[in-house]
Length: 289
Image (cartoon, rainbow, N blue to C red; front, side, top):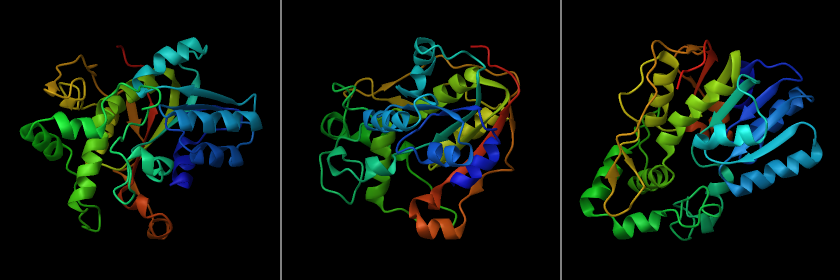
């Protein structure tokens, strides 16, 4: 959905775009092809993605700023790299596991590849963090039931039901990487660094992700952090009653009517797009945290 992302970001050559999920650099490279003088803040929690960003920086040394961290760490890394609030023209989130993560067997993301049950997006950077194998080995039957039930994915727009093992792998990955809390924090942080009327485009692949994005863009946030269970400790798994920013009306203006979905031609070329949902919004004001 690169063309749709470019359309909704509506940036100009020379602007600054914050790519929050740089991965292999697909979105950033597509933007640079259209806008050769664009400045890219290449952000990702995966050290391999950071290496990809460093490689792109060699091609465009004055335009690429690679940053390695979780969504929730953006404000720290931005301060360290002299990135000021309200200095970014557009931002991108392409959520879930990247193709390079899914295709690397030893990282354990794919059900179709033999490898250890790791599933950590930043395991090299955080070697002591919980793996999927840790969850399966130490969580109780009831705790596992709660994880799989909470993160169960709905059918896609053609009512094609995912295999139960696919759902289990996805649930473990979301849990291990605390993806829903990170998404919430990422949207709050991006709001701080976008200029007024700056735009953000978010591609999600899970109904819970899309629900969080919709809640931010329409000003209907949860009374608590959206991820009910987080991998702070594996045994027992702990509920967290954490602080959440409360909005008085949305700080965003939604640019999409509902969600934008991939065309059938794109789905044929890239089956991963089957579940993709794009929402975009324009910043109206800065959130007071």
